[in-house]
Structures are given as structure tokens and as C-alpha cells.
Image 1 (cartoon, rainbow, N blue to C red):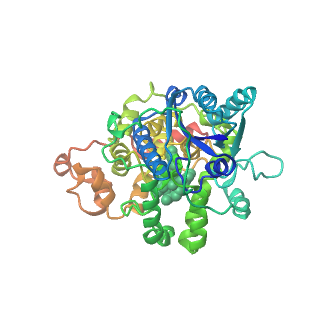
Image 2 (image 1 turned 180 degrees about the vertical axis):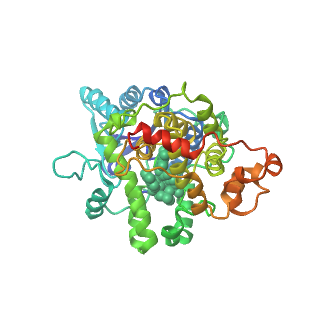
Image 3 (image 1 turned 90 degrees about the horizontal axis):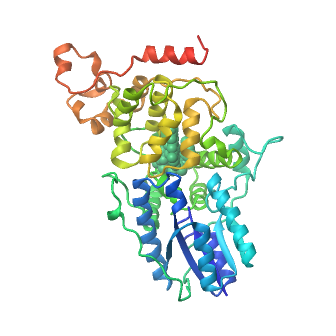
Length: 456
Ligand code: FAD
């Protein structure tokens, strides 16, 4: 008998329930990845993620070859390709990780319908993309949690299955042909400092993180220049690491750092369960504040300055340039650049979210759109009108200015925290630095926001 495992956001061999179930019930397994034209058509095929994906597929293919198997790669409509592989191999069972986005849900439904009519069975596995299935815990009277803290409490009490290792052998039938594995070098427009993808890299980073990062996480997660977070987000996005394994390992390590890290992983699960229940929140305000946001046409120059890292606020610009250079940004940077765009410039959060999705290697519908909504005050934040002051944020999280000097070389000659306020320099001295004046005064931005939200 033959089973198909359709890999999606779970590009790994360790702790992979669909692969394990397929190997337990069939003689041979087809590990299939479909380069789904629907994902590119929906605008999700940004260069950094395509390049990282190429690394992931190469590594997954190598891991399967070490186990006597191979990866089958196809391009096209995912449902049509799965059906084709089923008819080529006579497979009776198809295994797939449950997804939360509207796209993933539709894919599941379409697959179920198409396979049912051919007599094959679809098995959708929970506990693969998230540790606790979206919708598994709900508050009284609602289909999802809209507030993080009570969700965290319930989520923490859920039993999470034990993580397990990679299979020893993966026997793959002869026959189903595969395309060449895509290569990163073939993708144009990739960020120069993009990290390498793949399960091998993910496991190396996990080991280094457990040895050198986890214990200090609680104290250091907001240290912008220290860069002391795990940087595991791209691996969680592509599933080269399992959330279950991370949670289990952190819980086993114990301590304040591990607790804080698990809490952060829970934020990911929280946003996933919100999106699963409210798929439209990827596009529409989760909670309306009756905003009349400034659009691309209303604020073209300011939006472009923000995108290019030339707002005149050094910490905002540093973070935006990190995003462009690495395809990744520190969480504190994401918070303050998103806050700056939506509140200080009062620009529609969708414009910022789109820019992030064009560059972020971990760009994720659930985490990106819902964090943007959180910062814009249209999401699940219980203090929707809070405004982060970028200068105070900079002094607090980059006290000596090292993060700014790393990413804004025009200001590198300014020592210490003075780098956060170049406008305070005297005329001639200031003219030495080819760095723009602020696009807006913070007080003006704040006043506009307060008026817009009816707070004055
Ligand atoms: P760590 O601090 O090491 O945290 C460990 C893991 O916990 C992360 O890898 C991530 O999976 C999860 N996590 C941490 N914070 C959050 C959070 N606030 N929400 C959801 N999950 C979290 N994260 C993405 O994975 N993809 C995105 O597209 C994304 N867009 C964002 C947009 C904005 C405006 C903001 C404010 C945050 C966004 N985040 C996103 C969340 C967070 O910034 C990143 O997950 C984190 O910076 C990744 O770095 P890390 O792996 O070193 O995190």
C-alpha cells in the first residue's frame, strides 16, 4: 500500500505526525511538496521566502535520501497535483498538517472533495503547525479567545503530546517523477543578509539557543543591539522546527528564561487561533475604531521614507534597514516601526503589513496581520490607543545607540545616545551628517492620532 504525505508548513523529518502516521499504515510513502501556483497568485511568494523555501526543500530532499527515500516536487494547483500523484501510485491515504489560514482551510476542503470522489482518504493532523490546535480551547460563549492572558492560562493547562525523532527509513515507490529542487541562487531580489533555511540549520540553531540563549531570554529579549532572541521564527514559519518540540524542550529546561520563551511561543498560537476563527482579520479590522486612515495617496512621501528607513527617526530607520538587509527584524523594532507608521503617521496598517510581507522571511498571515492590528489598535490589544514614542523607546532599548550605529552608518560618528536625536545638534555640526530631518514632529503626529480617535 502507498500513502502520500503532503508537506506544507512542516518541512522537517523530526516530530512529524503525518509522516509517522503514513509510515505506520503503508508500505511505501510519497513525500510530496507542491509549489502551489495559488500561493504566488495570492501574493505570498516574496523573494526572501522563496529563497528560504528553496533551502528547506534541498535539505528535506537530502534528509529523505539519507533514509533511502526522495522528495517528490511538483508545480501547479495543489489539489490537481495531489490527485495526479494518487492516480500514478494508487495511494489510498493522504496525510496533511492542519492549517489555519483561509487558504489552508480551503485547500483542505478542496482536497477532501476531490479525494472522496476517487475513493482515497484525507487525514488532517493537528499538533503539527501549532502545539495546541486552533479552536481546541475556547472561552465560554465564544469560538476563540480575544484576549491573550486568559488564553495563555488555558493553553498552558493543555496537554501537549511528546515530541519524537526523525524516522530511520522512508521507503518511496518508484514512479512518481519529480522536478528539480529549486535553488536559492535562482531567486532574484533576495536580501543580502538572509539566513539559511532548512531543518539542518534549524536544529543547529535550536542547539545553540538551548545552550547559550534560553536562560537569559527573559532579561535580554528586548535588548535591541544584543540581538538575544532565538531567531527561530523563520524555522517555525516553514516548520523546519516543531512548535511542540520547542515547547517541550523549554519546559524541560525550566527557569524564568524558558517560561518567558514559552509564553512568546504562545503568542504565536494565540494569533493562529484568532485567525482560524476570524479569517477575514487578515484584511479587515478585527475591531473597528472607525479610523479614516491616511492612504498611499494621502501620505506617499512619508510612507516611502518609512519603507526606505529615512524617516529621520534613527531607531525607526535602523529597524527598517535591518528588515531590508536581513529579511528579518527584532521584535522591538517591529513594534516601534509599526507603531510609528500607524499612530505617528496615521497610515493604514494594511500598507505596513504588506511591506513587511514583501520582505520578512518569517512573514506569516497570522503573526504578521494580527501583530499589525495589535499595534494599530484594531486588534486584540486591550490598550488600543497606546502610542510608543520612538525616542524614549530608543533610549530604553538601545541605551548606548549601538543598534542605530550598526544600521544607520551616516550617523556612526555620533557617540552614545546622542545618536537617537540628531536634530538636537547645532546647525553646522548637524549639516555634517547626510541624514534627513524628521518627516513629522512627534507632537503633531500624536495630536493627529488623538483627534482621529476622538481622544482630545
Ligand atoms: P523570539 O523572541 O525568540 O520568540 C520565539 C518565537 O515566539 C518566535 O520565533 C515566534 O514564533 C514566537 N513569537 C514571539 N513573539 C511573537 C508575537 N508577538 N506574535 C507571534 N509570535 C511571536 N512573527 C512572525 O513569525 N511572522 C511575522 O510575520 C511577524 N510579523 C510581525 C509584525 C509586527 C508588526 C510585530 C509587532 C510582530 C511580528 N511578529 C511576527 C512577531 C515577532 O516580532 C517575531 O515572531 C519575532 O520577532 C521573531 O524573532 P525570534 O524568533 O527571535 O523571536
